[in-house]
Image 1 (spheres, each protein chain N blue to C red):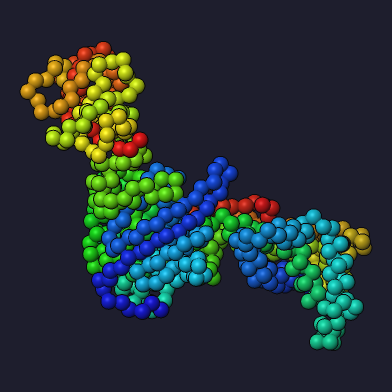
Image 2: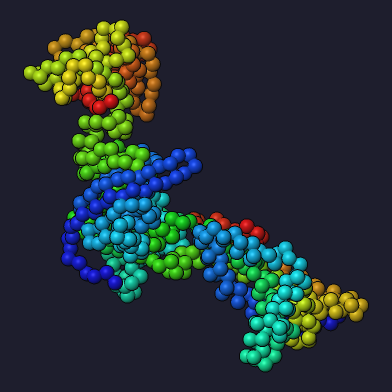
Length: 236
Length: 378
């Protein structure tokens, strides 16, 4: 039984970087989805939800094209750094961010929407700007949703396969994540190794989710008023 | 940063706005014009009259379609001039109907919330002073979920008052409280406003609160102000039937002026709907009316006396025979329906019912003073 610890470390690193980026992108995006009154808001929501239903290979394919040396983005990156984005860790991060976007944004937006609008009205009459209302009222009352979003995007990135294979290929130490490693081992008929790695991934993801759900549950029951919202799934 | 002002201030809030609201059931238009000087101005009316919408417009949470809202020191909204001051810049103290206390913050933090522009120490000092003034300094570290309804009301008031608002909006702030707690909070609020002297718009649909506050009343119905004046003026001499119902007239009748006695200051009115019977005449106070003109008469069930024999040597001018057709108990009050040509509701105490042995079928005399008959336009 051998576990590819290099792939394990790389996977954790990828998931951590992606979760942090998604947290930063997810806050304003979810805020907009929760509070905007634009008629075409549903289109943005549909686009954000796309990765849930799209085959990862489709997403991976378009990301690969977008990152390649023929696209404006790829060319700009190349002129900037001297190499292409495809088959690099950065490329992998970009693909994974897109792929896990709904798993962050949907729980965020759902918990923002659940905040009582009259609290925001009160906050405004007390002189608070929308940003201050967001930081002092919306975010503290959405903590379970924020934890869920981060945990789901982390776990989802840990286990992704299709997008990674399309965008990153299979370069040890650079783009070979655990799920690719498992695939490799099965291809090489090394079932014991595949089993060990799979089990590791399974236990790790379960532990991460159990911890998050457990924390949230305690939090929700200790608060006597306010937060009743809690989602099991990223779908609203 | 708000500029320091000389206290006590005095100023007038003037509002003249139109706002259409279309819901699926019916279109509704708020169309009001009034001024509110410093002190309490009570907005009184049934739910759905537009009272909360009006407060939302003053606070800036709703935008009127047309008109102008001017606070004591500045213009909040002016459709023609294109002025619409942001909510956060209006410095309006607004205690919302459900209070909207921040559930994740302590009472102290709630009170400090509106003082973000001040240094930390100053914030704390002002919040502490306000908590003391509202008699809730012992609750500073408690969250809203840990304190009683009356205490929550006080926290919400403190949170609004501490910001030194130029207008105070209170949306049924005391609805859920018992009379004693209510009276205490109102006293504290009055005390506070003796120093600050700002206009306070106080929404309620409780008649008791209108009388307890005892200042100017605007009666609203379906988006319009239908009457205004002191509670006494508005509630005891209502000109409109909605006001009458709000003011607690259980008995409202159509009537025709039969004769006018200018020398005595009274009129005789015949209640309609019972031409056949003989006892349909009521002596009422004199108003400017011609014999034959139509009006309405409102009589409170509690203002009618009952006797089991025809009273003699009594000053009341209306003595009407009838019989009890039903007896009901409401709280500690006995509500009787009496048929005396028309049906009248009469309230008596339990003890009175026992003493007179009143029951279904009992023959009674109704005793109604001339000035218990309130006249209004029909």
